[in-house]
Length: 135
Image (cartoon, rainbow, N blue to C red; front, side, top):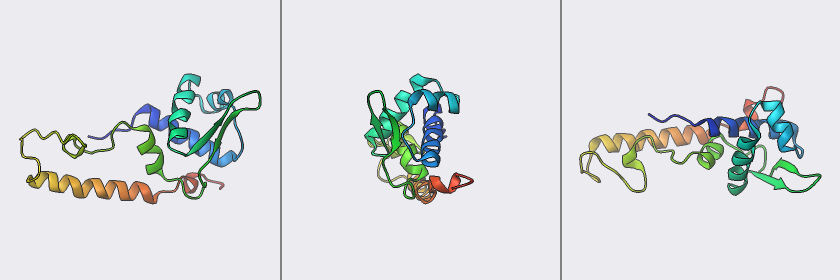
């Protein structure tokens, strides 16, 4: 069963906050406002920066700010940036670990592929800005 990590939960909350405030926010403020340990803020925002979702600015006036168009950021963007895998089953991962040794001709795997595409499509259709009450 696919279950999102706490890191991804924190990442979604951070991105929602940054979308709502639309300015550079210090990691300390994010930590205090969202009740997330600062070490997690730094870990999450680094991954979000690598994915092109946020910019991290160093120095006295530094902080984190949304980089990507706020109307384009999807739930999928954040999840895929922060999760080590988004596959609903191991057989769908790049290494393709099949418990029955039947990679390539398994009917159950075919169903998993359909479900995987449905999950990804749905998550890609959810814009984070739409999850903010007073956007």
